[in-house]
Image 1: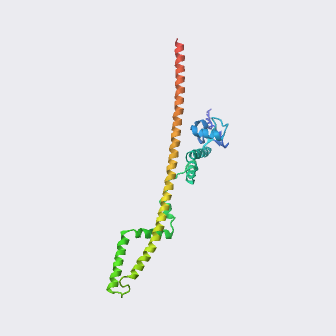
Image 2: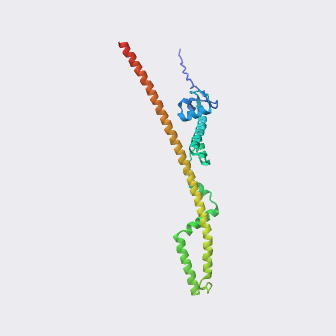
Length: 240
């Protein structure tokens, strides 16, 4: 007769989230007493009577953490801007804020904006200056020599009109390009602010978490040391 041994693996115990009531596994939740003190106090203030060893799902914990960060920032800075709310939302959703602003700006340009940028770029180059000087000298030489007739005799009134029209059109085109450059700089500044604020909040969160872990480790070491002292005293008492 052959005997078959059956090995049964017990499933890990599941817990219900103290905030939402959803069933969560130990991997998808954390105990309240395992959280850093600031966040734990915030949750206790919003949910009085919650048990010290209550389980909280990571999804609910992300919402509580974003509310805690918003409350902390509001206490430090006053009213929060839309950028601050965007950063807090990205923290709750674990989104990445870093993005390539240049590609987004370039892809959103209209035909007129592309033309304005090209004209402003060409108008501010040595190629334009040299080309324009050559054009003016050629215009005056042809007019003086009479190769095409005296179409614009001295003092070159038609040439002055052409130069005035070019200057009148070039100025607003350059202003359009400068306004676009200011908008690009503002977008870059806003993106840098989001990234820097999120990095600051994440670093602050890590500092608090490390401090909390060190405190718990010192408490456990103190407990172990106390137990060791008791055992040593007990052994010494038996030897007597």
